[in-house]
View 1: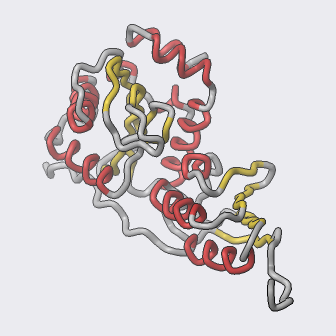
View 2 (view 1 turned 90 degrees about the vertical axis):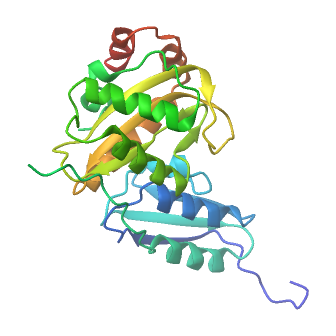
View 3 (view 1 turned 180 degrees about the horizontal axis):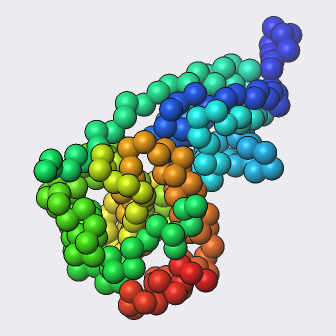
Length: 106
Length: 151
């Protein structure tokens, strides 16, 4: 700001599609929220009419976002554009599938 | 699909958990599911280990004294679960560091991520209702819990 360069304080928005085959389950939601918490900017995630706090993972579960679901990310505050990029990247991370319980054969 | 009343096994509800550790309460819930005829062909140890391994990747304690421990099961035909209540509360490394008094344990088929997501959504949504959580915590029997889930 001191250099007279306008900062991108937002709000900035982007529609992203969930690509994780398991959808936005607890671990990706927690990783997303943890990243969002590093910034002072406000982060919200919207699915249709429902908007939730992007810094609180249990709230993200309310979106029940399966693979293919479109979500709108909105960042409002300092470095909004950069944060939006980082969060978009985070959402694309696929978490390794948890090994299932396998019933005994026979 | 996936309202709590649709996946909770009535006979596996534990209204008065005796264990006081994370692994202990999970074991008690798994044994209750097996006693109710679910996953009886697996060893309880194996199911408990899978749930504990998942917890090690990050606690499923959603805050406000509630947790949703879970695992996937390769042989499960549909998502099922149980509800358990702990009067004393259990240390669970929850998001708000509070002890857990209400647990919803889920066992999901491997290939139905949507059902798992909708079950999580339903649990979180139900538990945002303070009155519901309060009534649940006061419940003293399987039947009382069951009635609350069907309200």
